[in-house]
Image 1 (cartoon, rainbow, N blue to C red):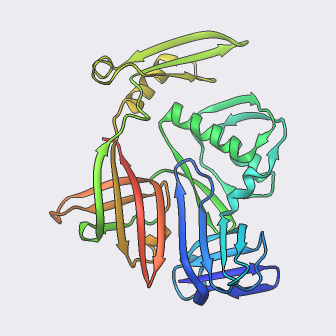
Image 2: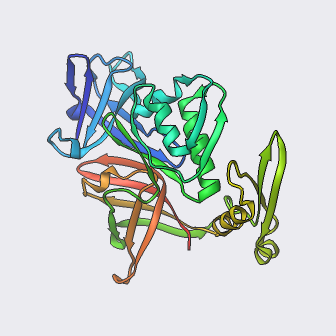
Length: 317
């Protein structure tokens, strides 16, 4: 494991002085976080970059983290430093887009607007059209708004994959590397279910001149009796078939997801790159069944050549 600091022409290999190291990401969060404690640290500066590599060579394929130092605190007595850095997407919440008009596929428009700010980003089409003039807001708020609409209208969730200064928006589960963990690597594992994000009734509305032009409501009556009435109202936007939209989203939103919390210890440098939004596979105790899970949050630590990852997982059936 290598921890490198860079600021203009200055470079420090902090690896020998690092006493604690952890990084995390979660669903809906555009930028992951890195926390590090450094013994008798050299003079680091805010906005200097921290780079984390899983191997001893500084190869892009082994890079886990790349982003600016946002907070740092130095112990006046020992000189030890505690620092927090975020991935480059952190800057998207510190810059705002002016009042502009969106007109086209939401994913394509999102990429167009963020690229205009000088950010190297790619984004797939989201599968629905947006035509609106947005109020001034941060780029992060725009990303959150459009990806939440994508979930409402298509059932797809998205996350941001980083490759140094390149940001790629991907559907959850579309990670290029799919880790497989054997049950023997799990130090803890618990399973359950959650209805926090479940809806049993969906209403889709299409507006014209700020008035409801058409509306349709679909309900999963058996689930209403089982867990109660929980209604989601969706703005259909340009979609004229509100009944089909309501039915489609009810089918997705009324699924009760299985949840799982695991702690896994491993030495796989590729699996060390996993983040919220990734698909992972678990070889269960019988060594025959393999289950698929989406990571909704990841808290990772490294010590003595071993990674420990606390993962929150979800699976819809």
